[in-house]
Structures are given as structure tokens and as C-alpha cells.
Image 1 (cartoon, helix red, strand yellow):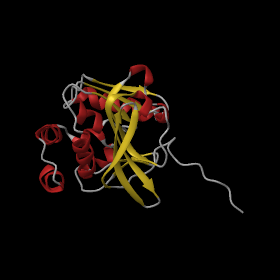
Image 2 (cartoon, rainbow, N blue to C red):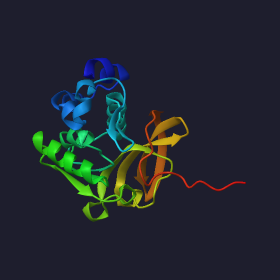
Image 3 (tube, helix red, strand yellow):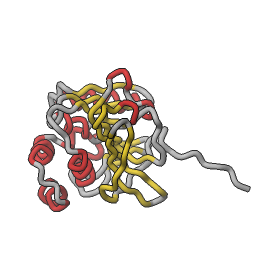
Image 4 (cartoon, rainbow, N blue to C red):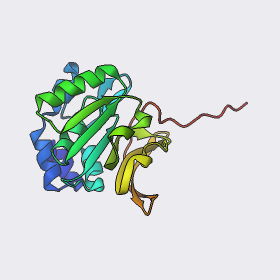
Length: 207
């Protein structure tokens, strides 16, 4: 997976490569999906959720420029794969997930790989984890159509946030950074994913 999907996508930072090599991806997918855990495609997690392709995750981490001193918030981490990866790269990881079954399974999977600096909190994704913040990095593990103000408010000055902004079938990863109290965005690369609960745009009724 690393040699055929990650490195060919111009992701060469050693911490990302090492974390992906050291993390058993099959531990973070449903039992029925273990045989395809390393395929170059999204993996269904149930409830309309997916584990994003390894290349997409790797490129997001690359764009976020994760540091060993970073305190990270993951929004919508599913069964915990991105948390397991980031636990090896950052100082601490807080993952928020609102699906109770996923919370339970993510906790078990993270314990199995001894990701002792990662914790899973249950709660609405759009609210983040304000009581555990502020954070240096927020990674939204899925797509959004709109970004609730509660999430950027949990970033420190200089903090970074990444998300897949989805518009119909097309999506793009953008990375934001807080500079002088304002969040400035830049385009990173194209990617798509299902829109996470709480991040869909309001649909106006039309006759």
C-alpha cells in the first residue's frame, strides 16, 4: 500500500511512511472488509461512512505538516485508523465520533495497537471537543459542505485544519491556518468522500 499508493502520490515524509507501515489497517475496518483493507479505494465502515484511501489520508497529513509537539483533534475518525496514524506522529490525539458502535470499536482497535496517547470521545461531530482544546491541528476525517464555526474556534493561533470540501460529485482538500486570529484557506488537492453527519449544507426549498 505504501509503495503503490502513498509514495507515488509524492508523500515521502518519514513519519507518515513509518506510521502507515507500522499500523495494521485491517484492525480498523469491519471484519467483513479485512481482506480488502489495503485496496486503493474507500472501504465501507457502515452507516454511510467510509475509511478514506490511504493516499488521501497521507496527502492530508503531508499538507497539515504534523509536528511531534502537536495536539490534534480528529473529527469523525470512524474506527480509529487516522487516530492510530496520528498517535505516532503527534504529541496527543483526541478523536470525536458520534456513532456509539464506532466509538466502542475505535477504542478497542486503538488499545490493540497501544495508541496510548489517543482518546476517543463520544459526541456530535460538528461540535468538536472544545473542553479538550485548544488544538494545534484539526483533521476532519470525511467530507463537508459547510464548516460549523465551533471547529475553527478550537484552534490555537497558528493552528491548522484540513477537510474535504464536497460539492456534488467533486471535492477538494483545503488546509486552513489561523493567522492573527483569522482563518486563511488554501487549496491542497482534489479528493472526494461522503459528507459527515452535521456538515451538510442547508437545502433551500424551491417551487
